[in-house]
Length: 89
Image 1 (cartoon, rainbow, N blue to C red):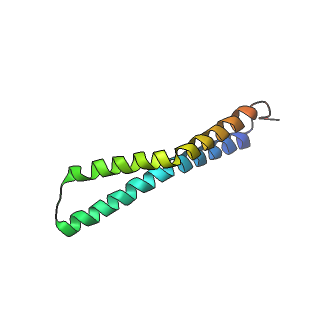
Image 2: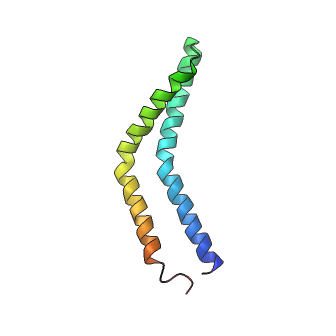
């Protein structure tokens, strides 16, 4: 196995992780920002007010992008398994 092969597999793995986690992280960030603006406007500074909406947003996003995420992970895994025989040649 060449160092180039390891770098290519690592790069593809990092891309897959970022693409898979990205939608949930973006949803949590947007909901957190909206709640922060609401708290600043109303001067309600309750720390626990952010958790439930963020959790709901992440779960809804996971439900919406779940099939795409599973397909992406399945494609990545299939590519890695099928390339085992050709790595290093």
